[in-house]
Amino acid sequence: MTGKRLADGGLNYPGIGFTEHGRAPEGYACFVSREYLGEGLALYRRVAHGILTWELQRRSGLRVRTESDVVIPGARVVSGFGVGHFRINAPCEVVWVRHPAPGDGPQSAGFGYGTLPGHPERGEEAFEVEIGADGRVFLKITAFSRHANWFYQAGGLLARAAQRHITSRYVGGARQLAAGES
Picture 1: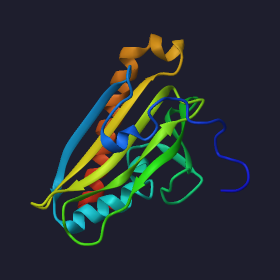
Picture 2: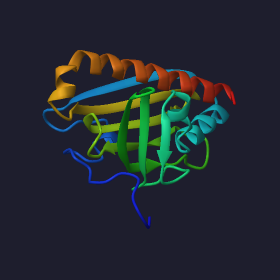
Picture 3: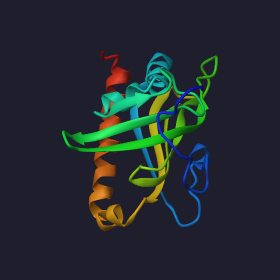
Picture 4: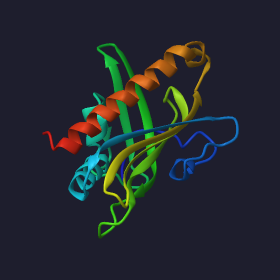
């Protein structure tokens, strides 16, 4: 990528890439959500495409600005959530990507991104779609984080409630992708 970056600074947490293997670094809580979406390779591929083109974030209600129309390692994205002047921008950088494999065997596709300075948290979040040998398709979200500063730490319960809310929005967006909704 050339020119001015969408967000400044570097990744600001330990364990870069740990979400690819469902782990969290010491001192960070790990959150995993796994939701059934349906069955079949076509459904799996629709959801994978939506995840790897930022569509999952958009369908969850986030305002998405990114350096790349498709998810690639090193791409930066700023997701905005909130209303009007009460909008929080959350800059991240993609740290790993897994594309759908050829064929129809069990597999997963998705990506993980990590926080940059200015994000209310420090950590990583991953979005994957999985298909098993039985053809069942699941959305898996893995995250580990800590509050970035005292202000967000003071609102810890509110921040956890916000995480549960946005996760439910991601699940809703994945269900739309699975159903082939435009």
